[in-house]
Amino acid sequence: MPKGDKFVALTVYLDKCNKDIVKMSFSDVEKILGFKLSNSAYVHQAYCSNTQSHSFAFGWLNAGYKTQNVDIKKQAVEFISNDI
Image (cartoon, rainbow, N blue to C red):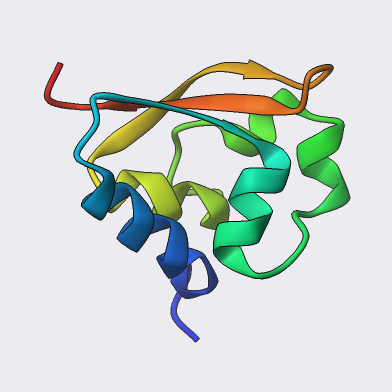
């Protein structure tokens, strides 16, 4: 499986949402993906970094988004369109 393919459901979701800012809880992301995020997502803010060295990032990078305001304590993340 090519890198990032297991996160394609997030790409599809973000492609279809047509919003500049999408605020989601980690559990919302898990519902979209159909599986639980790695334990690292709940401990390390860098898990949601905007880098292609993390497979998870392909889910939003391929949809033209970046992450912002990753809140480990609240288990939430914002996806911001690259168009704004």
